[in-house]
Amino acid sequence: MVTRDVENYWLARFFVEDQARAKCRGESSTSHCIDGSGDGDAGHYYSGTFLDWVNLENGVGVVLFEDLGVEKIASIPYPMTPGQKIRIKAIDIQPRLDGNSIFVFEAKTY
Image (cartoon, rainbow, N blue to C red; front, side, top):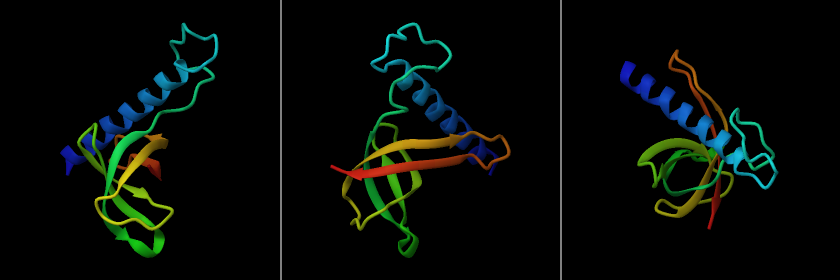
């Protein structure tokens, strides 16, 4: 249980840092961005695979982040079949040491 909480915390920190790096890589003139401020897009899409439904009625399913080798639960706004390739983007990530890190992802089909 503690191991899963720690892994979720550090995964959440990874996504937060990824969003900050993406903002710095934006098209603005803020090329020296150190603190995460910038005008670029927050985060980028990862290649993924839709694995299965957790709650079909509410559009909640399990996705695999292929580049990271990580499975997470995500909101899926439209019908999908297991094995379908998707793009996944971290929208709102809140790392918490109490085991309740919050992950909100956006999924799109190719």
